[in-house]
Image 1 (tube, rainbow, N blue to C red):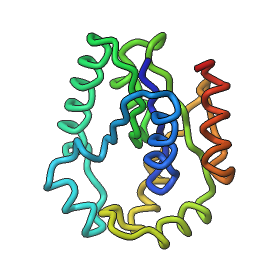
Image 2 (image 1 turned 90 degrees about the horizontal axis):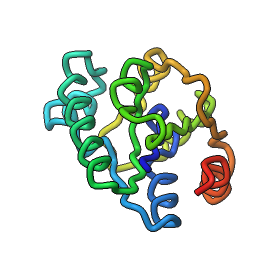
Image 3 (image 1 turned 135 degrees about the vertical axis):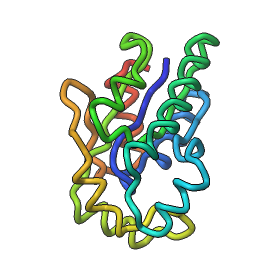
Length: 161
C-alpha cells in the first residue's frame, strides 16, 4: 500500500509521514526530494511554481509510485498534491494508494511556517498554496491541530493498518 499524505506546506506531511512510516515499519519518501534544483531555488525566493515547473516533478513521482507498486513496497509519501488533477495523475491504483488530507487553518499553518527553519518553502508562498489547493472529497481528512501521535493513530485506524 502507498499512503499519500497531502496538504499545503506546513501541514505536517513530513513529520506525520515519518512517524507513520516508522510505526508501520514502512518506507518514507518526501516528494520535496523529487523537485529540481531550479524549482527549489524558485520556492526559496518565494516564487510560486508554474504548471510547467510541476510537470516533470509529477512525472518523476508517478514513475516512483509505479516502481513501488510493481515491487509491492509499502510507502508513506509526503506530497502536497494540491490539485485534483495531480492526485488523479498519482493515484494509479485506488485499491493500493490511499490519500490522507492533512487539513489545518491558514493561521495555524502560517504560525508553523514562521517557526520553521532550514526549509526552502517560504511562508510567502502560503497564499499561493491555499489558492492552488483544491480540497479533496471522499478521502480521509485529519485535523492537524491534534498532536502528531494522535494523527498517526487516527490514520492507522481509518485505513485499518
